[in-house]
Image (cartoon, rainbow, N blue to C red; front, side, top):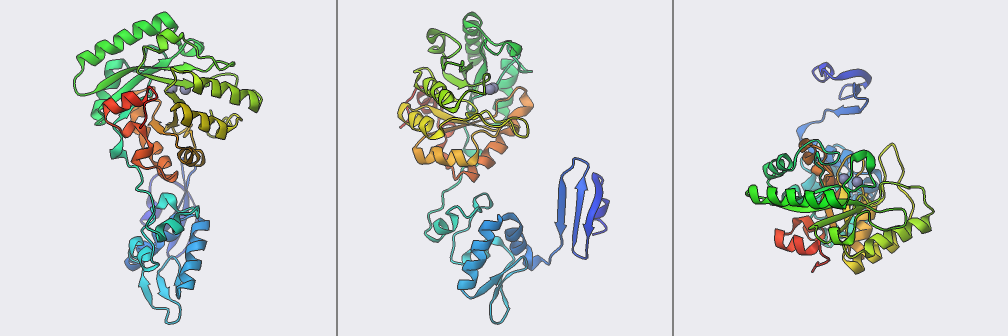
Length: 365
Ligand SMILES: [Zn+2]
Ligand SMILES: [Zn+2]
């Protein structure tokens, strides 16, 4: 405990006991450290990572089976003798459940699914074959096409897309038709020049207030990946916003709806629209929904992602990188996708390149 208290970024200690210390970091984040014997490690992990709702349901299950469950162990109700606790896996196994990954511990059906051996095999970072939302110096990014490509290659990706902004986003120096065509040419040249990764010519085109896209159909049709996003006029009536998004989904050039609810965490709420209607249209027209991994966005959220999955809508997990270093943020998207029960099959950018290219033209299987 004395050793922990010497941790340099520690600002002030909030509470301290024999086996527990709570402190605040300089960043403002609170950290609780618990000391437990090794044989309780799994029980403690389970206790502190599950949501309250999950833990209550699990404790009730334990009681029905003649056990008690707390942060020290799963123990026999009568003899109080521990029967599991060293690992989380052995606790779930004793409760006749498949191991429930921590992201699913919300009491939203995971206990039932674990009992029936019906838990999803959650997506992992290794499943992703590409990242298809990123910007370059041509608009508001900080790196060139070539620099982004080398960084994506270093990530082990097989493909990527350069998706700079369109002209409606004037402060980002968005592209008009003429510049977009020249940019496609540059992206194709880079694709020729750089081995080991396929670079799709793409665009993040603004969905204008009336639902039209910000570039001509002819130019959009030349793109391998068209992400259509709302970047302005967020305060429309829900019916109007729904109509706007439906029109974007129905546009034959749209591959993906970018950061579909527009929320910026701690700064801007999601705009209001009929999510279910938009998802139904997306399923019908085979337009994917983005899971934007940028920590400020994390959009769609886990609840909407699960709704999309139930509707049969496919997801694309992207970073929306404006710098080579942002490609790492994909891990936040993966964590959120796992919370939403997504598997490899739900996410299009796990596909090999030819099938992904087809999927971006409404060709899901
Ligand atoms: Zn955007
Ligand atoms: Zn973007």
